[in-house]
Image (tube, rainbow, N blue to C red):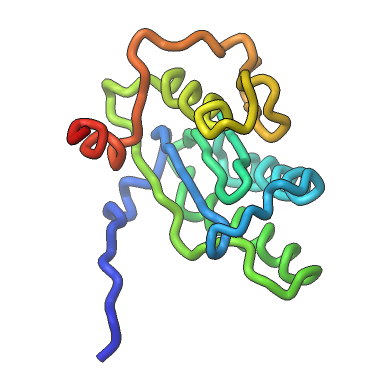
Length: 176
């Protein structure tokens, strides 16, 4: 009997409707594929199309060299986050594999459904500042692979009153 991976997903109903989601999806084996601006532009095009097709607003995105952060929300009751992410990843992966004969994405993205006390602006700020935290640029607006499809993101770069930290990092920072 082989190893069975633990299912960490919430029930499917948690991914439906007008909710907010913080998503991180990594490249296969964390290879830094998104240093290529053409690949980022292509993936961003698929992201735009699939967000519109599936009824999602993308408030913040950041293509890091080996992963993508998204802050998105369903815009109507039938919006399905699992379908949105699946079709975006399938389309971008297929185009990439046609050219490179390699996989683009790891199988499962990390996700977090925002709780009522989590402000989307703080999560967006966390996403946009990621390249600064990683030492890739001095200011978020210098990173060419970040943005928003719904807001003038560069006007929202003031640190929020309460900085947001993903839940899986909170326990580690409390231990330090």
